[in-house]
Length: 425
Ligand code: AMP
Ligand code: GLY
Image (cartoon, rainbow, N blue to C red; front, side, top):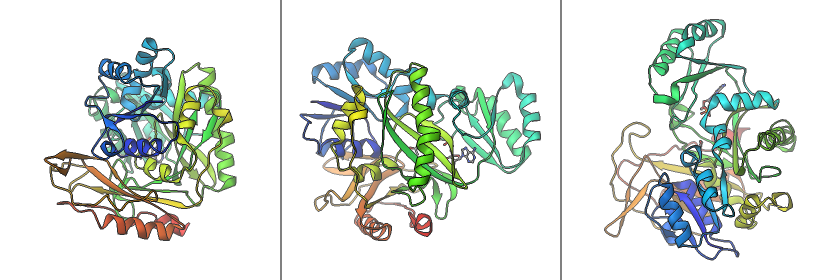
Protein backbone atom coordinates (compact mmCIF):
# COMPACT_ATOMS: atom_id res chain seq x y z
CA UNK A 1 0.00 0.00 0.00
CA UNK A 2 1.14 3.55 -0.75
CA UNK A 3 0.73 5.94 2.18
CA UNK A 4 0.67 9.75 2.34
CA UNK A 5 1.37 11.61 5.60
CA UNK A 6 0.28 15.27 5.66
CA UNK A 7 2.24 17.75 7.77
CA UNK A 8 5.80 18.88 8.42
CA UNK A 9 6.59 18.68 12.14
CA UNK A 10 8.19 16.29 14.60
CA UNK A 11 4.85 14.52 14.99
CA UNK A 12 4.70 13.76 11.27
CA UNK A 13 8.35 12.64 11.17
CA UNK A 14 7.64 10.24 14.05
CA UNK A 15 4.42 8.93 12.43
CA UNK A 16 6.17 8.46 9.07
CA UNK A 17 9.12 6.72 10.76
CA UNK A 18 6.87 4.22 12.53
CA UNK A 19 4.84 3.60 9.34
CA UNK A 20 8.10 3.11 7.39
CA UNK A 21 8.78 -0.04 9.48
CA UNK A 22 5.63 -1.78 8.22
CA UNK A 23 5.80 -4.91 6.08
CA UNK A 24 2.57 -3.75 4.37
CA UNK A 25 4.11 -0.51 3.08
CA UNK A 26 4.99 -0.07 -0.59
CA UNK A 27 5.79 3.62 -0.94
CA UNK A 28 5.66 6.38 1.64
CA UNK A 29 5.05 10.04 0.79
CA UNK A 30 4.97 13.15 2.99
CA UNK A 31 3.40 16.48 2.05
CA UNK A 32 5.25 18.71 2.65
CA UNK A 33 7.40 16.67 5.10
CA UNK A 34 10.79 17.93 6.27
CA UNK A 35 14.48 16.98 5.88
CA UNK A 36 13.93 14.18 8.43
CA UNK A 37 11.10 12.56 6.47
CA UNK A 38 13.13 12.98 3.26
CA UNK A 39 15.37 10.10 4.37
CA UNK A 40 12.48 7.64 4.78
CA UNK A 41 9.86 8.94 2.34
CA UNK A 42 9.36 10.99 -0.81
CA UNK A 43 8.55 14.56 0.14
CA UNK A 44 6.00 16.38 -2.01
CA UNK A 45 6.03 20.17 -2.02
CA UNK A 46 2.77 21.88 -1.12
CA UNK A 47 0.54 23.15 1.63
CA UNK A 48 -1.75 21.04 3.81
CA UNK A 49 -4.52 23.56 3.11
CA UNK A 50 -4.32 23.08 -0.68
CA UNK A 51 -6.92 20.29 -0.91
CA UNK A 52 -6.95 20.22 -4.71
CA UNK A 53 -3.18 19.72 -4.91
CA UNK A 54 -3.39 16.99 -2.25
CA UNK A 55 -6.09 15.23 -4.24
CA UNK A 56 -3.98 15.42 -7.43
CA UNK A 57 -1.03 13.86 -5.59
CA UNK A 58 -3.25 11.10 -4.16
CA UNK A 59 -4.36 10.20 -7.69
CA UNK A 60 -0.90 10.54 -9.26
CA UNK A 61 0.79 8.34 -6.64
CA UNK A 62 -2.02 5.76 -6.20
CA UNK A 63 -2.29 6.51 -2.48
CA UNK A 64 -4.30 3.96 -0.48
CA UNK A 65 -4.14 5.62 2.96
CA UNK A 66 -3.84 9.28 3.95
CA UNK A 67 -2.77 10.18 7.50
CA UNK A 68 -3.59 13.78 8.40
CA UNK A 69 -1.15 15.12 11.01
CA UNK A 70 -2.29 18.66 11.98
CA UNK A 71 -5.76 19.89 13.02
CA UNK A 72 -6.24 22.80 10.62
CA UNK A 73 -7.01 20.83 7.44
CA UNK A 74 -9.36 18.59 9.48
CA UNK A 75 -11.29 21.55 10.86
CA UNK A 76 -11.39 23.02 7.33
CA UNK A 77 -13.02 19.81 6.04
CA UNK A 78 -10.30 17.94 4.15
CA UNK A 79 -11.88 14.57 4.94
CA UNK A 80 -15.25 15.62 3.46
CA UNK A 81 -13.43 16.99 0.39
CA UNK A 82 -11.38 13.84 -0.23
CA UNK A 83 -14.21 11.40 0.51
CA UNK A 84 -16.47 13.20 -1.95
CA UNK A 85 -13.88 12.58 -4.68
CA UNK A 86 -12.87 9.08 -3.54
CA UNK A 87 -15.44 7.41 -1.24
CA UNK A 88 -13.19 4.36 -0.77
CA UNK A 89 -9.97 6.21 0.08
CA UNK A 90 -8.72 5.24 3.56
CA UNK A 91 -8.20 8.34 5.69
CA UNK A 92 -6.96 8.83 9.25
CA UNK A 93 -8.74 11.93 10.52
CA UNK A 94 -12.36 12.90 11.26
CA UNK A 95 -14.79 14.75 9.01
CA UNK A 96 -15.57 18.44 9.59
CA UNK A 97 -18.29 17.62 12.11
CA UNK A 98 -16.01 15.36 14.18
CA UNK A 99 -13.16 17.89 13.96
CA UNK A 100 -15.33 20.38 15.86
CA UNK A 101 -14.37 18.45 19.00
CA UNK A 102 -11.10 20.36 18.66
CA UNK A 103 -12.22 23.25 16.44
CA UNK A 104 -14.85 24.56 18.88
CA UNK A 105 -14.43 24.44 22.65
CA UNK A 106 -18.14 25.22 23.07
CA UNK A 107 -19.08 22.28 20.81
CA UNK A 108 -16.74 19.98 22.76
CA UNK A 109 -18.23 21.10 26.10
CA UNK A 110 -21.80 20.50 24.87
CA UNK A 111 -20.75 17.07 23.59
CA UNK A 112 -19.17 16.17 26.95
CA UNK A 113 -22.24 17.28 28.89
CA UNK A 114 -24.58 15.41 26.54
CA UNK A 115 -22.65 12.15 26.95
CA UNK A 116 -21.93 12.49 30.68
CA UNK A 117 -18.17 12.88 30.30
CA UNK A 118 -16.47 14.44 33.35
CA UNK A 119 -15.14 17.95 32.62
CA UNK A 120 -14.93 21.35 34.34
CA UNK A 121 -18.26 23.22 34.80
CA UNK A 122 -18.55 26.02 32.23
CA UNK A 123 -20.62 28.67 30.48
CA UNK A 124 -20.13 30.19 27.02
CA UNK A 125 -20.52 33.88 26.15
CA UNK A 126 -20.37 36.19 23.12
CA UNK A 127 -19.80 39.94 22.80
CA UNK A 128 -23.56 40.47 23.13
CA UNK A 129 -23.55 38.78 26.55
CA UNK A 130 -20.36 40.41 27.88
CA UNK A 131 -22.17 41.85 30.91
CA UNK A 132 -23.47 38.40 31.84
CA UNK A 133 -19.93 37.06 31.40
CA UNK A 134 -18.58 39.66 33.85
CA UNK A 135 -21.30 38.70 36.37
CA UNK A 136 -20.40 35.03 35.91
CA UNK A 137 -16.72 35.81 36.55
CA UNK A 138 -17.77 37.70 39.73
CA UNK A 139 -19.47 34.54 40.96
CA UNK A 140 -16.34 32.37 40.48
CA UNK A 141 -13.25 31.88 42.60
CA UNK A 142 -9.71 32.44 41.22
CA UNK A 143 -7.94 31.23 39.15
CA UNK A 144 -10.14 32.18 36.18
CA UNK A 145 -9.98 30.07 33.00
CA UNK A 146 -10.96 31.71 29.68
CA UNK A 147 -10.90 29.81 26.38
CA UNK A 148 -11.38 31.23 22.90
CA UNK A 149 -13.88 28.92 21.21
CA UNK A 150 -11.99 28.42 17.93
CA UNK A 151 -8.48 27.38 16.90
CA UNK A 152 -5.91 29.93 18.13
CA UNK A 153 -2.61 28.11 17.46
CA UNK A 154 -2.41 26.90 21.07
CA UNK A 155 -2.62 30.43 22.48
CA UNK A 156 -6.36 30.75 23.08
CA UNK A 157 -6.44 29.70 26.75
CA UNK A 158 -5.88 32.34 29.43
CA UNK A 159 -5.59 31.48 33.11
CA UNK A 160 -5.27 34.32 35.59
CA UNK A 161 -5.53 34.79 39.38
CA UNK A 162 -6.75 38.36 39.01
CA UNK A 163 -10.44 39.13 38.41
CA UNK A 164 -9.81 42.51 36.73
CA UNK A 165 -7.20 40.91 34.45
CA UNK A 166 -9.71 38.17 33.58
CA UNK A 167 -12.34 40.78 32.65
CA UNK A 168 -9.79 42.71 30.64
CA UNK A 169 -8.69 39.58 28.74
CA UNK A 170 -12.29 38.62 28.11
CA UNK A 171 -13.01 42.06 26.68
CA UNK A 172 -9.90 41.84 24.46
CA UNK A 173 -10.99 38.44 23.19
CA UNK A 174 -14.39 39.83 22.22
CA UNK A 175 -12.59 42.75 20.56
CA UNK A 176 -10.67 40.34 18.32
CA UNK A 177 -7.45 39.45 20.19
CA UNK A 178 -7.66 35.95 18.66
CA UNK A 179 -9.65 36.98 15.59
CA UNK A 180 -12.84 35.04 14.91
CA UNK A 181 -11.67 32.28 17.31
CA UNK A 182 -12.55 34.56 20.26
CA UNK A 183 -16.04 35.53 19.06
CA UNK A 184 -17.33 33.00 21.58
CA UNK A 185 -15.50 32.42 24.87
CA UNK A 186 -15.83 29.48 27.25
CA UNK A 187 -15.35 30.39 30.92
CA UNK A 188 -14.76 27.33 33.05
CA UNK A 189 -13.99 26.12 36.53
CA UNK A 190 -10.28 25.73 37.33
CA UNK A 191 -9.18 22.11 37.75
CA UNK A 192 -6.24 21.42 39.98
CA UNK A 193 -4.20 18.27 39.37
CA UNK A 194 -1.65 16.58 37.11
CA UNK A 195 -2.14 16.52 33.34
CA UNK A 196 -2.01 13.47 31.10
CA UNK A 197 -2.35 12.96 27.35
CA UNK A 198 -4.36 9.88 26.39
CA UNK A 199 -4.43 8.70 22.76
CA UNK A 200 -7.07 6.56 21.13
CA UNK A 201 -7.28 5.23 17.57
CA UNK A 202 -10.90 4.73 16.54
CA UNK A 203 -12.97 3.58 13.59
CA UNK A 204 -15.95 5.50 14.98
CA UNK A 205 -17.42 2.46 16.76
CA UNK A 206 -14.55 0.71 18.52
CA UNK A 207 -11.15 1.79 19.65
CA UNK A 208 -7.55 0.89 20.39
CA UNK A 209 -5.82 2.70 23.25
CA UNK A 210 -2.29 3.84 22.34
CA UNK A 211 0.40 4.49 24.97
CA UNK A 212 -0.31 7.55 27.13
CA UNK A 213 2.21 10.36 27.59
CA UNK A 214 2.94 13.46 29.59
CA UNK A 215 3.87 16.67 27.85
CA UNK A 216 5.97 19.55 29.27
CA UNK A 217 4.24 22.72 28.07
CA UNK A 218 6.06 25.62 29.69
CA UNK A 219 9.27 27.10 28.28
CA UNK A 220 11.05 27.23 31.64
CA UNK A 221 12.28 24.55 33.99
CA UNK A 222 9.92 23.53 36.83
CA UNK A 223 6.96 24.56 34.64
CA UNK A 224 7.63 28.28 34.61
CA UNK A 225 7.26 30.91 31.91
CA UNK A 226 5.17 30.97 28.75
CA UNK A 227 3.22 28.08 27.29
CA UNK A 228 4.80 26.44 24.22
CA UNK A 229 3.72 23.74 21.80
CA UNK A 230 5.59 21.33 24.08
CA UNK A 231 9.20 21.09 25.27
CA UNK A 232 9.38 17.35 25.88
CA UNK A 233 7.41 14.25 26.72
CA UNK A 234 7.58 10.96 28.54
CA UNK A 235 5.69 7.67 28.11
CA UNK A 236 4.52 5.70 30.08
CA UNK A 237 3.38 7.96 32.92
CA UNK A 238 3.71 6.34 36.36
CA UNK A 239 0.41 7.61 37.81
CA UNK A 240 -1.53 6.31 34.81
CA UNK A 241 -1.68 2.85 36.38
CA UNK A 242 -4.25 0.14 35.61
CA UNK A 243 -6.78 1.51 38.09
CA UNK A 244 -6.57 5.08 36.77
CA UNK A 245 -6.66 3.99 33.11
CA UNK A 246 -9.70 1.83 33.87
CA UNK A 247 -11.51 4.97 35.03
CA UNK A 248 -10.36 6.82 31.90
CA UNK A 249 -11.68 4.03 29.68
CA UNK A 250 -15.05 3.63 31.43
CA UNK A 251 -15.81 7.30 32.17
CA UNK A 252 -14.22 9.02 29.18
CA UNK A 253 -13.21 6.80 26.25
CA UNK A 254 -16.35 4.63 26.04
CA UNK A 255 -18.85 7.54 26.28
CA UNK A 256 -16.75 9.58 23.80
CA UNK A 257 -16.89 6.78 21.22
CA UNK A 258 -20.62 6.33 21.90
CA UNK A 259 -21.12 10.07 21.27
CA UNK A 260 -19.10 9.98 18.05
CA UNK A 261 -21.21 7.09 16.81
CA UNK A 262 -24.57 8.57 17.90
CA UNK A 263 -23.74 11.98 16.39
CA UNK A 264 -22.98 10.11 13.13
CA UNK A 265 -19.55 11.64 12.77
CA UNK A 266 -17.37 10.11 10.04
CA UNK A 267 -14.55 9.67 12.53
CA UNK A 268 -11.73 7.29 11.70
CA UNK A 269 -8.59 8.54 13.34
CA UNK A 270 -6.94 9.71 16.50
CA UNK A 271 -8.61 11.17 19.57
CA UNK A 272 -6.16 12.93 21.87
CA UNK A 273 -7.77 13.44 25.26
CA UNK A 274 -6.02 16.07 27.36
CA UNK A 275 -7.08 15.28 30.89
CA UNK A 276 -6.47 16.29 34.46
CA UNK A 277 -5.99 13.76 37.24
CA UNK A 278 -7.82 15.42 40.13
CA UNK A 279 -7.15 13.31 43.23
CA UNK A 280 -7.33 10.07 41.25
CA UNK A 281 -10.34 11.02 39.09
CA UNK A 282 -9.92 11.96 35.41
CA UNK A 283 -11.54 15.11 33.94
CA UNK A 284 -11.32 16.12 30.28
CA UNK A 285 -9.59 19.46 29.68
CA UNK A 286 -9.79 19.26 25.91
CA UNK A 287 -10.17 16.99 22.92
CA UNK A 288 -7.80 17.13 19.99
CA UNK A 289 -8.59 15.28 16.79
CA UNK A 290 -4.97 14.46 16.00
CA UNK A 291 -1.90 13.18 17.81
CA UNK A 292 0.02 15.43 20.21
CA UNK A 293 3.40 16.95 19.51
CA UNK A 294 5.88 16.13 21.15
CA UNK A 295 3.91 13.23 22.68
CA UNK A 296 3.84 11.35 19.34
CA UNK A 297 7.64 11.24 19.25
CA UNK A 298 7.65 9.28 22.54
CA UNK A 299 4.52 7.22 21.79
CA UNK A 300 5.87 6.00 18.43
CA UNK A 301 9.13 4.87 20.08
CA UNK A 302 7.11 2.41 22.22
CA UNK A 303 4.83 0.77 19.65
CA UNK A 304 6.17 -2.62 18.56
CA UNK A 305 3.24 -3.99 16.53
CA UNK A 306 2.68 -3.00 12.89
CA UNK A 307 1.32 0.54 13.22
CA UNK A 308 0.29 0.77 9.56
CA UNK A 309 -1.97 -2.29 10.09
CA UNK A 310 -3.63 -0.49 13.03
CA UNK A 311 -4.19 2.62 10.89
CA UNK A 312 -5.66 0.61 8.01
CA UNK A 313 -7.96 -1.20 10.47
CA UNK A 314 -9.17 2.12 11.93
CA UNK A 315 -9.83 3.53 8.48
CA UNK A 316 -11.69 0.41 7.35
CA UNK A 317 -13.92 -0.31 10.38
CA UNK A 318 -12.02 -3.28 11.82
CA UNK A 319 -10.18 -1.72 14.78
CA UNK A 320 -11.93 -4.11 17.20
CA UNK A 321 -9.77 -6.93 15.80
CA UNK A 322 -6.47 -5.14 16.44
CA UNK A 323 -4.11 -5.91 19.31
CA UNK A 324 -1.36 -3.45 20.03
CA UNK A 325 2.09 -4.47 21.29
CA UNK A 326 3.90 -1.85 23.33
CA UNK A 327 7.30 -2.05 25.01
CA UNK A 328 7.35 -1.61 28.79
CA UNK A 329 10.44 0.55 28.36
CA UNK A 330 10.20 4.30 28.89
CA UNK A 331 10.43 6.75 26.01
CA UNK A 332 11.68 10.28 26.64
CA UNK A 333 11.66 13.17 24.17
CA UNK A 334 13.48 16.44 24.70
CA UNK A 335 12.84 19.31 22.28
CA UNK A 336 15.63 21.64 21.14
CA UNK A 337 14.17 25.08 20.38
CA UNK A 338 15.36 28.40 18.95
CA UNK A 339 16.39 31.20 21.31
CA UNK A 340 13.39 33.47 21.90
CA UNK A 341 10.73 30.78 21.29
CA UNK A 342 7.72 30.83 21.95
CA UNK A 343 7.99 34.55 21.22
CA UNK A 344 9.97 35.89 18.26
CA UNK A 345 13.09 34.01 17.16
CA UNK A 346 15.47 33.92 14.21
CA UNK A 347 15.66 31.13 11.64
CA UNK A 348 18.36 29.95 9.27
CA UNK A 349 21.17 28.86 11.63
CA UNK A 350 23.17 25.80 10.47
CA UNK A 351 22.64 22.70 12.64
CA UNK A 352 25.47 20.33 13.51
CA UNK A 353 24.38 16.78 14.30
CA UNK A 354 24.90 13.24 13.12
CA UNK A 355 22.00 10.92 12.37
CA UNK A 356 24.30 8.14 11.12
CA UNK A 357 24.71 6.34 14.43
CA UNK A 358 21.02 6.34 15.33
CA UNK A 359 19.10 3.13 16.02
CA UNK A 360 15.41 2.37 16.61
CA UNK A 361 15.68 3.21 20.30
CA UNK A 362 17.49 6.51 19.69
CA UNK A 363 16.00 8.92 17.19
CA UNK A 364 16.36 12.54 16.23
CA UNK A 365 13.04 13.80 14.85
CA UNK A 366 12.97 16.96 12.77
CA UNK A 367 10.39 19.55 13.84
CA UNK A 368 11.42 22.86 12.28
CA UNK A 369 14.34 22.31 9.90
CA UNK A 370 15.11 23.00 6.27
CA UNK A 371 17.73 21.78 3.80
CA UNK A 372 19.84 24.52 2.19
CA UNK A 373 22.99 23.94 0.10
CA UNK A 374 23.71 20.47 1.55
CA UNK A 375 23.19 21.77 5.06
CA UNK A 376 20.32 21.48 7.52
CA UNK A 377 19.30 24.85 8.98
CA UNK A 378 16.82 25.92 11.67
CA UNK A 379 13.40 26.79 10.27
CA UNK A 380 11.06 27.08 13.28
CA UNK A 381 10.71 27.61 17.01
CA UNK A 382 10.81 23.92 17.79
CA UNK A 383 13.73 22.54 15.78
CA UNK A 384 14.69 18.93 16.61
CA UNK A 385 13.93 16.30 19.23
CA UNK A 386 16.14 13.77 20.93
CA UNK A 387 13.82 10.78 21.45
CA UNK A 388 15.09 7.74 23.28
CA UNK A 389 13.71 4.49 24.69
CA UNK A 390 15.37 3.00 27.78
CA UNK A 391 14.73 0.45 30.52
CA UNK A 392 13.85 3.07 33.15
CA UNK A 393 12.92 6.74 33.28
CA UNK A 394 16.36 7.53 34.65
CA UNK A 395 18.29 5.70 31.94
CA UNK A 396 16.04 7.01 29.15
CA UNK A 397 16.49 10.55 30.44
CA UNK A 398 20.26 10.15 30.59
CA UNK A 399 20.41 8.78 27.04
CA UNK A 400 18.07 11.48 25.68
CA UNK A 401 20.28 14.26 27.07
CA UNK A 402 23.40 12.49 25.80
CA UNK A 403 21.87 12.34 22.33
CA UNK A 404 20.84 15.99 22.62
CA UNK A 405 24.44 16.94 23.42
CA UNK A 406 25.38 15.81 19.89
CA UNK A 407 23.09 18.50 18.40
CA UNK A 408 24.06 22.14 18.25
CA UNK A 409 22.97 25.37 16.57
CA UNK A 410 23.25 29.03 17.49
CA UNK A 411 20.83 29.94 20.27
CA UNK A 412 19.77 26.32 20.97
CA UNK A 413 17.73 26.02 24.17
CA UNK A 414 16.12 23.04 25.91
CA UNK A 415 14.69 22.21 29.31
CA UNK A 416 16.97 20.13 31.51
CA UNK A 417 14.21 18.82 33.79
CA UNK A 418 12.13 16.67 31.42
CA UNK A 419 10.86 13.63 33.46
CA UNK A 420 12.02 15.02 36.84
CA UNK A 421 8.47 15.36 38.20
CA UNK A 422 7.27 11.91 37.06
CA UNK A 423 10.43 10.41 38.47
CA UNK A 424 9.22 11.59 41.86
CA UNK A 425 5.61 10.31 41.44
P1 AMP B 1 -6.31 23.60 26.36
O1 AMP B 1 -5.90 24.31 25.10
O2 AMP B 1 -7.77 23.56 26.60
O3 AMP B 1 -5.61 22.28 26.53
O4 AMP B 1 -5.65 24.45 27.55
C1 AMP B 1 -4.26 24.72 27.60
C2 AMP B 1 -3.73 24.42 28.98
O5 AMP B 1 -4.41 25.23 29.95
C3 AMP B 1 -3.99 22.99 29.44
O6 AMP B 1 -3.01 22.12 28.98
C4 AMP B 1 -3.97 23.16 30.94
O7 AMP B 1 -2.63 23.23 31.40
C5 AMP B 1 -4.59 24.51 31.13
N1 AMP B 1 -6.03 24.38 31.40
C6 AMP B 1 -7.03 24.37 30.51
N2 AMP B 1 -8.22 24.26 31.12
C7 AMP B 1 -7.99 24.22 32.43
C8 AMP B 1 -8.83 24.10 33.59
N3 AMP B 1 -10.16 24.06 33.50
N4 AMP B 1 -8.23 24.06 34.79
C9 AMP B 1 -6.89 24.14 34.90
N5 AMP B 1 -6.05 24.25 33.86
C10 AMP B 1 -6.58 24.29 32.63
N1 GLY C 1 1.51 18.75 23.01
C1 GLY C 1 0.20 19.26 22.98
C2 GLY C 1 -0.43 19.30 21.67
O1 GLY C 1 0.03 18.71 20.71
O2 GLY C 1 -1.47 19.95 21.54
